[in-house]
Amino acid sequence: MKAGKLRFAKPNKYWVESSHKRYVPCAGDTVLGIVVDSKADNFLVDIKGPTLAFLPVLAFEGGTRRNIPKFEMGTLLYARVVMANTGMNPELACMDATGKAAEFGPLKDGYMFESTTGLSRMLLKSPPCPLLETLGKKLAFEIAVGLNGRVWVNASSPSIIILVANSIMKSESLSPVQQKIMVDNLLQRVQ
Amino acid sequence: MKVNKEETRGELVTPGEVLGKSAELKAGKGAYVSPHNKTVYASLTGFRTLTYPLPDSPDTRPTVDVIGHKAHGAVPEIGAIVIARVTKVMARMASADIMCVGPKSVREKFSGIIRQQDVRATEIDKVDMHSSFRPGDIVRALVLSLGDARAYHLSTAKNELGVVSAESAAGATMVPISWTEMQCPLTGQIEQRKVAKIGA
Image 1 (cartoon, chains in turn green, purple):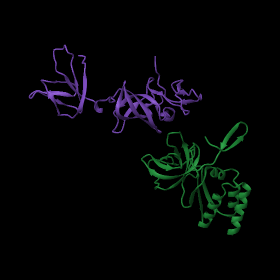
Image 2 (tube, one colour; image 1 turned 120 degrees about the vertical axis):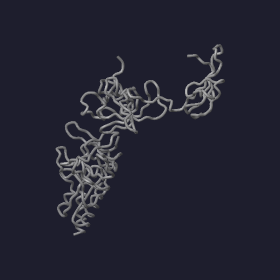
Image 3 (cartoon, chains in turn orange, blue; image 1 turned 90 degrees about the vertical axis):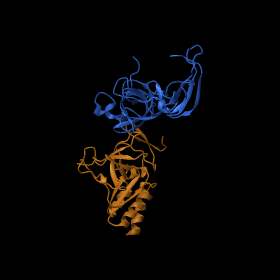
Image 4 (cartoon, each protein chain N blue to C red; image 1 turned 30 degrees about the vertical axis):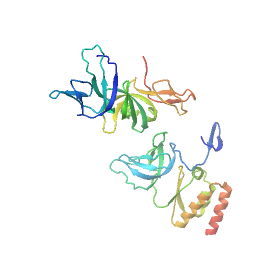
């Protein structure tokens, strides 16, 4: 049971939206996980949920017993939640439903920080939120957003990474107009 | 067998301890008489119990038994029907704690595993463990084998085996509707289980 804003979509869908620092795994979500351990058949991945998630060793594009990826402890992965039943450990996959790699897999370099689930959902909106649009017009960076409250940013220089990360962290409670104003001010001071 | 009137429970004895002379005591369960020095020794670990015979029987010696240790409790055997509580459900198997073997409850903890292929008899590769068991369900199962050092291998692949009692997400004991579904009486929600067929 959660408190939040009641939302409505025609014709008959109502739901309650809330923002938390804790993630409840749900099938179909894309998340950023950190490899904690590797067992015979799967990797144990921390996705900020109640239990660790299992990532089968073969759940990669073209994955066979001969080319099993070797992830060290601490590797950041972009993965999809395949199954998340209560009482069982969630199962992840690093490929989409058709079996293609599609951007899933380990994320190299860059900087990862934690956010709330509400902020992650806002960053993943389409059309894109004003924050990311304005930042994208002036700066070159790449970003991966996990619905479990983790965001990864990578850019050519550390100062751009820090700028993008700070502006995202500051924009949690700002309205779209306020976001645009904040980003414009930030970029003016830097350039 | 004679019906004996009084029983007394004594101290803990270990195998090889002297229980008494065979002139004064008869050897019962867990005890034996050594022929060459006519003494009754214990052969098991447990509590020394004396049972006095009826006053009008020809033999006036009390019987000494060694009972009460948990190793004398019920132990699952191959082919026995056990009642177990599901503790963990995973993708390919479910673990359960065995609570009763037949009609008797066990004295120490035995672990059992129900593998995906042993849940039911038909379409065993399409079994979804989450729609068959949940943690906390009470199941009736058959012991397939002694398994490995960690757990017995159990099976629910018969009509009369499976979930006997389960709690719904709302906390009420569910009522079985079919061999795949149980319904919560409070909320009316239907949950999937591999239900045991009880009765005729």
